[in-house]
Length: 65
Image (cartoon, rainbow, N blue to C red; front, side, top):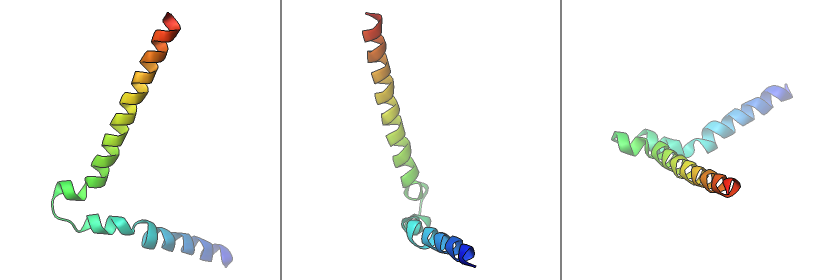
């Protein structure tokens, strides 16, 4: 009985609290407004990938010297 209450509490927490900001984006008009979070995440990933590749190149240059 307790295990079902714990899983129900976790589910309620996720749907009622964690996903609350996404309810705002769900009812917006336009593709760019509704996918704003995805474009922000993709841009952050691209920036971090460029930084990581730059560090790898600098490491390779110092090892080969």
